[in-house]
Length: 290
Image (cartoon, rainbow, N blue to C red; front, side, top):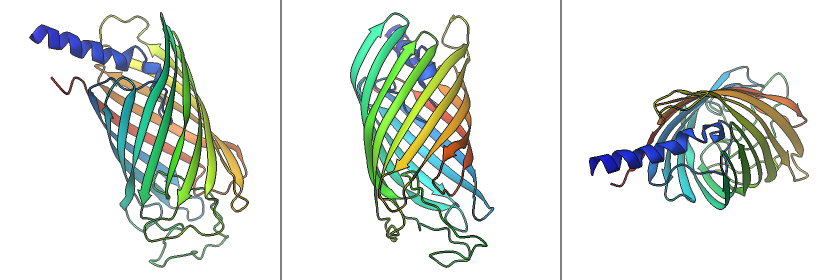
């Protein structure tokens, strides 16, 4: 029986290595985590706040559950000092992804999935610098027009993802819609758009190992992602396109370390920050139900 369990765990672990180049750092692939598995993740994002000159930090603890080979869910918390004088809890979100198409070949596959996300956030819409709320007294006008569901505002989003694996190269694209809603104690100011469209194009390449010998080998993956958003309301109209190169290490087929830098390359949307750095550690537990 013990040998059977070890074999099953090995097969599940293969899901983290044979398609490792699909484990994008700044977006989700159409593929899911292994069924009957649990993931624990901590993401730390560091920002240079454009209008205040302060260093912003956001911490995102996350639990992921592979319910089946087609369905997975995430529960995410947010805490930061981006909109307050000190680090505080901002709220949380639930993310679910359902894979509805899978076309598999040897060393290649094509997959599509639909996702939905909901966030409940308790944050002001402008940074609180001296304890007061509302528009702070900056030397230049505070003109941020970007909202997101990762700590900035409550709301819902949904969309589709398509991912193509070609041996060591994986390509993925996302198209989604976001509807922003009022935060727990704050209403969206009139100058913000309540609707936006997000889109991404991601590429991942498995650099190491050159040849798989066992699942204890360390994986090295390289990524580059284009991440964009367009506000669709007349108020707050604007768009941007970011580039986010990343490097990723996977240890023992269970633990991964992500490092990524994100910067804007085009756009006309005023934002809190135009660049950020991400550090993430994640650990996966397979075969959680014996």
